[in-house]
Image (cartoon, rainbow, N blue to C red; front, side):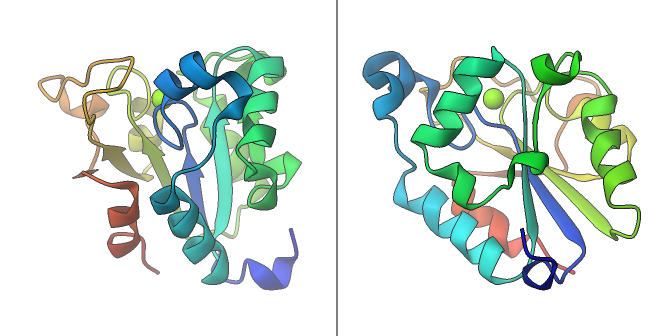
Length: 171
Ligand SMILES: [Mg+2]
């Protein structure tokens, strides 16, 4: 990604499954999955505004790479900005998935993580001082969300639609 296009020194990292697309769609359509217009518009808006976009996901590396390609996400996240935990020998819940980006961009002022799974997604980014945002389950998610967990696991912000994150991501 051209440095001039990521002028804000802010990273917005996304989970993949049930965050950028619905896993249920993959089960039904396989690699026929697409980004819905809200997700596409959100990513386009972040890119146009100069934010650096990343994906931090678990799952089988080959399958996740194929999903990313099928969704056209290569357009938004260059390959170095995709962390698939299996490829670097970590689990989704490992600190290293997040410190990777802090080490890579030491000059960055702010980091965001957008996810859906309260059991796994927000613990480490919370601990590391990232702003965490959860996209509320619309009833189709694989993992049920539990907002009764201890604070370390809870997102800073909950939104109903991915598009709503734009009002919370700022310099
Ligand atoms: Mg997920």
